[in-house]
Structures are given as C-alpha cells and as structure tokens.
Image (cartoon, rainbow, N blue to C red; front, side, top):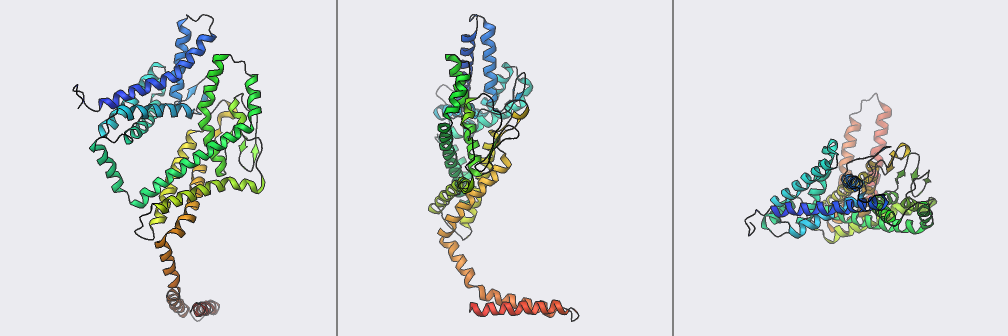
Length: 431
C-alpha cells in the first residue's frame, strides 16, 4: 500500500493515464499547429477542434484502427507512432508502476479504457472493437515490458521465475536466441534503409521541392515520414530474406527483381531501390540472414547447458518458432492499404516472409551450433560406429522377407537376393 492509503496497483493505472496523454499530445499538437498556421481566422475554434479530432484519429490509426478518408480507407499503420505510444507506456510504467500481477492488470485495463475514451471523443465509436484490441496489445506489451525492467516486488519475481521454471532450458535458450536474431536482423535492415536513403537522396529532394509546403507544413510532413520509417525497415527485412515487398498492385521489390510503378508524392518512397542487384550478387542478401542465424547459433552454443544430444536441436527449433512469429507479426503490422485502387496492397506477405526468415535463421544456427555440441557429435559417432550391427539386422530382415516371396514371383525374389548381396558387400567393406 502507498502511504496515502491507495492500493499499489493505482500507480500502474495512473502511469497509463500519463502515457496516453503524452502520446496523444505528440500527435494532436502538430495537427493543431498546422491547422492554425493555414487558417484564415486562427481564432475560429471549429478549425483547431477539427484538427484535434483528426489528430485523435491518427493516434487511433497507430493502434490499428483504419483511417477513413473521402477517397479510401487506410490500413497501413504508421509504426513510428505505434512505437511512440508503446515507449510512452513502457517508460511511464517503468518509472511509477509497481511490479506484480495487480500492476500488470491495472496498467493494461487502464490503457484499454483510455483508448476506448479517445475513440468515443474522436467519433470512431463504430470501430470500438478494433480500438479495444489495439489498446490491449499496446497496453499489455508496454506494461509488461515496463514491469519487467522494474522487478521490485517478490510477486513479480515469483511470476517470472514460475514461467521460466515451466519451460525446458533448451526452449528458453532458443527463445532468447530467436529474439536476439530478430533484433540483429532489424538492426541490419535499418542500416540497409540508410543506404537506400543515401542512394535515393536526389529523388527524395525532387519530390520535396515539388510539394507546396510552408515551415509548419514541412515539419508536420517530416514527422509523417518518420512515422512510416519503421515500415520501410520491415520492408527492407523482407527484401533481405528474398520474398521482398510491393508498393501497389503490379509492383515487386526484391534483390533479384524490381518492377516499379507510379508512386504517390511521398518523399520516403524515393528511397526504394530503383533497380535489382541482379545475378549471383542477389544471393548475398539471404546470406546475410543466414549469417545472423549463425550468430544466434553461437549464442546457443556459448550458453548451452546440454543434458542430451537433443538439447541443441530443441533450442534451434525454439529459435525458429520465435523468429517465425516475431517476423510474421512485424511484416503483417507493416502492410496494409495506403490508398485507393492499386495502392490497396502495400508491404510484404507475412505468411511467406516469416517462415522464410525463420528457415534461414534456423539453417545458419544449425550449421554453427550442431558441430559445436559435444553430446551431438558423440551421438553421431555412436550412430556411425554402430553401422555394422544395424546392417546385420537389416541383412537378416531382408533375407527373411526374400524367403517369404512365393516361388512363382521369380523376378521379385531375384531382386531381393541382389539387394541382400549388395548389403553384405557393404558390410564387408565397413569391416
């Protein structure tokens, strides 16, 4: 209990209120400022109130609520704003939340309730279920991460230790390696986007010069570019893995093939690769993912507590599962509709990119971790040394099967006898 008599869980609820207020202001203030600078009569309350409502809807858009315009329904979520909301919840909970199940529940429910309130004020009550789902995801994730960095109560330690104890150590290690691999892959994709921006700076500059923007409008438009920058990072991840992404129907952006089409006047799109790498060089892009998997395999080897030959394969299997889910969620969140017509399809395909990335990471991890495992190497040597004994058993079983063939089926009997003789010759060479 707090000194003033309030329950401990109220700290997490108040932290959620603070987080929502901060993230809402980050979106609403630029919208109101742009409205005031472009309005003929800045004292007209209807103008800035309408801009504030638009800002609230953009905040909801960052939580997965579709943004409806006069020409289209947009579902391409600006992941940059989503990250701002998530970080605000994480930072507020970490600073003032109280670790434990009550804090986790209170912080999450408070965030969900405030998301519903924002949807009602913005006039998006018809999409309340989607707003509640988005608020639940951001609220639970931000609250959980914040409390995980603030383990100040025994109840939180017991809950964390209980989950860890119920998981086999190989699965827990593989999950950590999978999270590490995805994090390194996102970092590598960010560096790739930086190279794209440098290479496409001339195109980006041409698009900016063609836009009629004043100072405030330029700042707001720049913030919009930053809001969609994480989406481009995830698209670069899909490009590295091989499947690539699309920006409109009929387009393709992969390392080996680029089929571009007319693009909207959005400067960030000028950073997209204008031509394919081509040839054998295109194979180097998926190889980067394999190398990151090798780093994850080294992580598994260094922290392995082997209890059997199956330990490393189980850890790599857990790595593959975590990577597939994490990458699939990222790709799904970064895709959607960016406009009417052909722009209704933008981004990667989660059910393709996720398994491909997981397979490449798992392959790289196996190449490094399996040969380095002494128990697995011992099991392979034991299996190889036992070949003559297995061959004797196979010889006897095959001879019995040949003897059971009816006399009238001469060709089948002769084939079986030939197989027995070949097996015996291999046994003699092995000896």
